Amino acid sequence: MARVRKGAGRPAPLRVLHVAAEWFPLVKTGGLADVVAALPAAQRAAGLDARLLLPAYPALRQALAGATEVARIGAAFGAARVALLRGTLPGSDVPTYLIDAPWLYDRPGNPYLGPDGQEWADTLQRFGLLGWTGAQLAAGGLDPDWAPAVVHAHDWHAALVPVYLAARGTAGTHARTVLTVHNLAYQGRFALERFGELGLPAWMAGPAGIEFHGTLRLLKGGLMFADRITTVSPTYAREILGPAEGHELDDVLRHRADRLTGIVNGIDDAVWNPAADPAIAAPYDATDLAGKAACKLALQRELGLAQVAGAPLLGVISRLTPQKGLDLLLSTLPQWLGAGGQVALVGSGDPALEHAWRAAAQAAPDAVGVRIGYDEALAHRVVAGSDLIGVPSRFEPCGLTQLYGLRYGSLPVVHRVGGLADTVVDADEEALREDRATGFAFAGASPEALARALRHALDGWHHPAAWKRVQRRAMAQDTSWRAPAARYAALYAEALAGP
Ligand code: ADP
Ligand code: GLC
View 1 (spheres, helix red, strand yellow):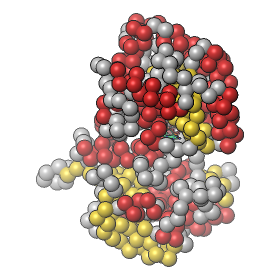
View 2 (tube, protein in one colour; view 1 turned 180 degrees about the vertical axis):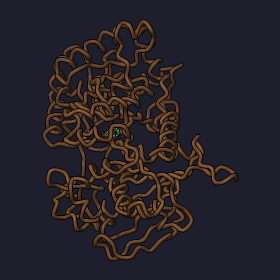
View 3 (cartoon, helix red, strand yellow; view 1 turned 90 degrees about the vertical axis):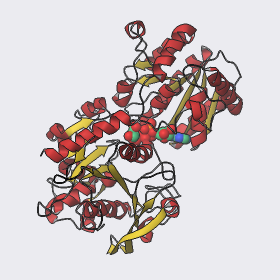
View 4 (tube, protein in one colour; view 1 turned 60 degrees about the horizontal axis):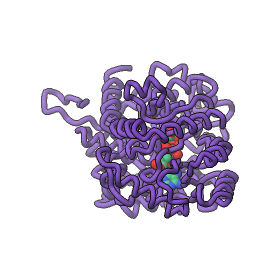
C-alpha cells in the first residue's frame, strides 16, 4: 500500500483528507454518502491515515464523539462563529473534522434543500466555507498536529478545495489534490455577481478560473485546478469527454484528459451482506439460497403482491429523476406484467414520476408494489427479495444498486452505460458459455431495448439451472472496496510523484 517515507525512519502512513457534503448513514441523499463513509474506512484498513472533513450538520454534530476544538476560525462566509472540531462518528474509526458554523449548517433539511424542498439561498456560502476550510487544513493552517499529503474532494460541493489552494499560489507547500466527479450533471452553478462572496482573487472570475459561460460553476473550477481528476467508472470517464455526457464541461475535461481516470466504486460488504443482514427475513449465501426464497415471499407479503415463487420479481431502489430511466420501465410495464412478472419499487423524487408509479401500483396491486419515500431497511429487503434489480438509467456514473444486486444474487438488468457497463456482464450466449454472465444489459435508452432485456431475463428465469449459475457468478464478484481502495492509493502515489 502507498506510503510516504519520512527521511530514513519508519514509513509514515500516507495522510489523506476526504472533503464532502454527505456521510452514510446520517446525511445521505445518494450514493455519494456511501462512498464517503466506506472509502476512508477501507483506506484506514489498508494502512493509510485517512480522515474526513464535513460540515457540522445537526445529525453529524450531535453524533460526533470525543469532539475537541482544533481551531477557532472566527467569522467567515457570513457566519459570525466558525470553529473546527475533530472526533469520530458512530460505527467509524475515521478521524472526522466538522466545520462548526451554526449560522450556515445548524438547520433542518438536507445539504442542498430546505424542509420546503427549495434550494438554500446561501448554498454558495455553505460550500464556499467547506472548500476554504479544506484548503486551509490541506495547507497546514488549521490543525497543528495534522495536515494531509493528499486532499480528496468529492463532487462540486468540495470542488473549491483545489481552487482555494491554487489561489494561494505556489508559495506554501501543500497537499496534492484529487477531485472525484460522482455525477457531472450537478455542477454548482451560481450567478457571476456573487463571485465576491468567495474571497478569491479577481482573475478567477474569468475563464481561467471558476467562470463558465457567464456563470460561476464550482465544479469547473475544481476540474481546472485539481492535480488528478477521477470519476466513478472507466466507461463514464470516457463518456464525459464527449458532448452527449459532458454536460457542457467536455471541453474542459478534454483539456485535462491526461489527468482523468475512472475507478469503479465498491460497496460496504458489512452493510450489504446477505449472510448477515439484520434487515432481511432470512440470511443466505451462494451455497444455500433457501433464505433468498424466504426473503422473496416476505417481500411479496409486505408489499401486498401475489405470493407466487414462480413470478419473477424485479426490484428497483432509486431516486426518481429523468437520469434513472424509470419512465422507460413504466412504458414496458404492461409487457412485463403480461408475462407474469412483478415489480417492487422504493424511491422518491420528481412528483410526476412518483404519481405515475403510485398509479401503476393502484392499477395492478398484486403485481406492482410501490413505496414512495426513503427507507434504508426496505431497500435491503427489496434487494434480498427480488430476482432482478432494474437499473435502466439514461446515464450512470457508477451506480450502487446493481452492485447490491450482484452481491445478493438478484440479477441486474441495466442500460449498458457508465458504471453499469463496467460491472454487469450480459448473459449472451458467449458469456453464458464462458460462465462470465452476471446479469442482463441493453444498449440504447428506449422502452423497446429495455423490453428486449426483460424478455431475455424472462427466458433465463425459465431455465433454473442456467439461472443459478449466473446467480452464483454474480455473487462471486468482488464488489468490496479492497480493489478500488488500492487503485486510489496508487493514484495518490502518482499524484505525489508527478506533475
Ligand atoms: P445515485 O447516487 O445517483 O442516487 P447510486 O446507485 O449510486 O445512485 O446510489 C443510490 C443510493 O441511495 C443507494 O445506496 C440506494 O440504495 C439508495 N437509495 C436511493 N433511493 C432510495 C430510497 N428511496 N430508499 C432507500 N435507499 C435509497
Ligand atoms: C452519483 C452517481 C452514481 C454513483 C454515486 C456514487 O450519485 O449518480 O452513479 O454511484 O454518485 O459515486
